[in-house]
Length: 134
Image 1 (cartoon, rainbow, N blue to C red):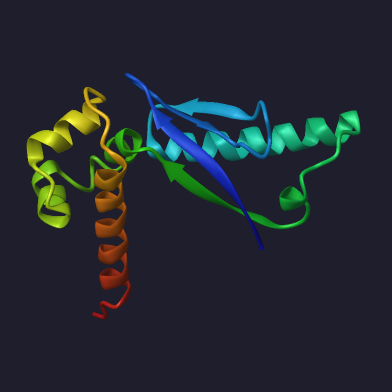
Image 2 (cartoon, one colour):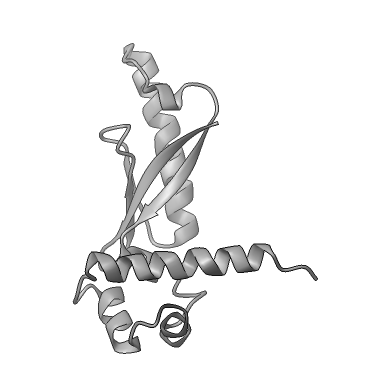
Protein backbone atom coordinates (compact mmCIF):
# COMPACT_ATOMS: atom_id res chain seq x y z
CA UNK A 1 0.00 0.00 0.00
CA UNK A 2 1.34 3.41 -0.96
CA UNK A 3 1.88 6.00 1.77
CA UNK A 4 0.99 9.65 1.30
CA UNK A 5 2.01 12.45 3.63
CA UNK A 6 -0.54 14.80 5.16
CA UNK A 7 1.14 17.80 6.77
CA UNK A 8 -0.72 19.10 9.82
CA UNK A 9 -0.14 22.49 11.41
CA UNK A 10 -1.86 24.43 14.17
CA UNK A 11 -3.05 28.02 14.19
CA UNK A 12 -4.75 29.93 16.98
CA UNK A 13 -7.94 27.83 17.09
CA UNK A 14 -7.73 25.24 14.34
CA UNK A 15 -5.66 22.53 12.80
CA UNK A 16 -4.98 22.79 9.09
CA UNK A 17 -3.87 20.02 6.79
CA UNK A 18 -2.57 19.81 3.27
CA UNK A 19 -1.37 17.04 1.01
CA UNK A 20 1.85 17.97 -0.81
CA UNK A 21 1.25 15.30 -3.49
CA UNK A 22 -2.14 16.91 -4.29
CA UNK A 23 -1.51 20.66 -4.63
CA UNK A 24 -4.56 22.60 -3.49
CA UNK A 25 -5.92 19.77 -1.35
CA UNK A 26 -6.37 21.42 2.05
CA UNK A 27 -8.72 21.33 5.01
CA UNK A 28 -9.17 22.66 8.53
CA UNK A 29 -10.66 21.26 11.73
CA UNK A 30 -10.96 22.18 15.38
CA UNK A 31 -10.09 18.76 16.80
CA UNK A 32 -7.68 15.97 15.86
CA UNK A 33 -10.56 13.70 14.82
CA UNK A 34 -12.17 16.46 12.78
CA UNK A 35 -9.00 17.35 10.86
CA UNK A 36 -8.39 13.70 9.95
CA UNK A 37 -11.97 13.22 8.78
CA UNK A 38 -11.97 16.53 6.89
CA UNK A 39 -8.70 15.89 5.04
CA UNK A 40 -9.85 12.39 4.04
CA UNK A 41 -13.01 13.91 2.60
CA UNK A 42 -10.99 16.65 0.88
CA UNK A 43 -8.73 14.01 -0.71
CA UNK A 44 -11.73 12.06 -2.00
CA UNK A 45 -13.27 15.21 -3.50
CA UNK A 46 -9.93 16.39 -4.90
CA UNK A 47 -9.24 13.02 -6.60
CA UNK A 48 -12.77 12.90 -8.02
CA UNK A 49 -12.29 16.40 -9.43
CA UNK A 50 -8.96 15.48 -10.98
CA UNK A 51 -10.49 12.40 -12.61
CA UNK A 52 -13.45 14.45 -13.87
CA UNK A 53 -11.08 17.01 -15.39
CA UNK A 54 -8.88 14.32 -16.92
CA UNK A 55 -5.88 15.39 -14.84
CA UNK A 56 -3.31 12.67 -14.12
CA UNK A 57 -3.37 11.29 -10.58
CA UNK A 58 -0.10 10.97 -8.69
CA UNK A 59 0.97 7.30 -8.74
CA UNK A 60 0.78 7.16 -4.94
CA UNK A 61 -2.97 7.86 -5.11
CA UNK A 62 -3.78 5.18 -7.66
CA UNK A 63 -5.39 2.15 -6.05
CA UNK A 64 -5.19 1.65 -2.31
CA UNK A 65 -3.16 4.09 -0.27
CA UNK A 66 -2.60 5.09 3.32
CA UNK A 67 -2.08 8.45 4.94
CA UNK A 68 0.85 9.34 7.18
CA UNK A 69 0.49 12.48 9.28
CA UNK A 70 3.46 14.80 9.60
CA UNK A 71 3.37 17.42 12.34
CA UNK A 72 5.44 20.38 13.32
CA UNK A 73 6.19 20.52 17.06
CA UNK A 74 3.45 23.06 17.90
CA UNK A 75 0.74 21.11 16.08
CA UNK A 76 1.90 17.80 17.62
CA UNK A 77 1.77 19.25 21.14
CA UNK A 78 -1.70 20.68 20.55
CA UNK A 79 -2.92 17.57 18.74
CA UNK A 80 -2.05 15.34 21.71
CA UNK A 81 -2.66 17.82 24.55
CA UNK A 82 -5.47 15.62 25.89
CA UNK A 83 -3.06 12.68 26.05
CA UNK A 84 0.22 14.23 27.17
CA UNK A 85 0.62 17.11 29.58
CA UNK A 86 3.79 19.19 29.92
CA UNK A 87 5.12 17.31 33.00
CA UNK A 88 4.73 13.96 31.22
CA UNK A 89 6.43 15.26 28.09
CA UNK A 90 9.22 16.79 30.17
CA UNK A 91 9.80 13.40 31.77
CA UNK A 92 9.80 11.61 28.40
CA UNK A 93 11.95 14.12 26.52
CA UNK A 94 14.14 15.78 29.13
CA UNK A 95 12.92 19.15 27.85
CA UNK A 96 11.97 21.78 30.42
CA UNK A 97 8.19 22.14 31.01
CA UNK A 98 8.32 25.89 30.43
CA UNK A 99 9.95 25.32 27.04
CA UNK A 100 7.25 22.79 26.16
CA UNK A 101 4.59 25.41 26.93
CA UNK A 102 6.41 27.92 24.71
CA UNK A 103 6.54 25.39 21.86
CA UNK A 104 2.86 24.48 22.24
CA UNK A 105 1.77 28.13 22.25
CA UNK A 106 3.90 28.97 19.23
CA UNK A 107 5.86 31.62 21.14
CA UNK A 108 9.02 29.72 20.33
CA UNK A 109 9.99 27.21 17.69
CA UNK A 110 12.27 24.37 18.73
CA UNK A 111 15.65 23.93 17.14
CA UNK A 112 15.83 20.81 14.96
CA UNK A 113 17.62 18.83 17.67
CA UNK A 114 14.87 19.65 20.18
CA UNK A 115 12.16 18.60 17.71
CA UNK A 116 14.12 15.37 17.21
CA UNK A 117 14.03 14.80 21.00
CA UNK A 118 10.22 14.85 20.87
CA UNK A 119 10.16 12.49 17.94
CA UNK A 120 12.65 10.06 19.48
CA UNK A 121 10.90 10.03 22.87
CA UNK A 122 7.48 9.38 21.32
CA UNK A 123 8.83 6.62 19.07
CA UNK A 124 10.50 4.98 22.07
CA UNK A 125 7.23 5.21 24.03
CA UNK A 126 5.38 3.69 21.07
CA UNK A 127 7.79 0.73 20.88
CA UNK A 128 7.45 0.23 24.64
CA UNK A 129 3.64 0.31 24.46
CA UNK A 130 3.52 -2.13 21.55
CA UNK A 131 5.46 -4.62 23.69
CA UNK A 132 2.94 -4.42 26.57
CA UNK A 133 0.70 -7.41 27.16
CA UNK A 134 -2.14 -7.56 29.65
